[in-house]
Length: 81
Image 1 (cartoon, rainbow, N blue to C red):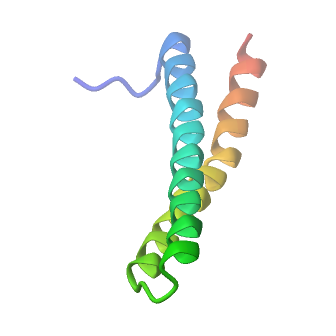
Image 2: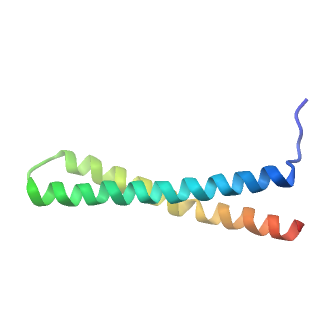
């Protein structure tokens, strides 16, 4: 038996986990981006920097794309209280 409605505590937990996921994906993207910049400065001909840059942009983009979902959950939680 599956419950269709989530409890408010579950929504708060989901919101908190999404905020943590957004924070760490942006931090990880920035860390990989810094590593890419250091690799470009030390070894300009490295092709691996392209893949690392794509990874950094993907992580940062994913973190930013989670913002509307977080706002939606936050507003839904505020309306219920």
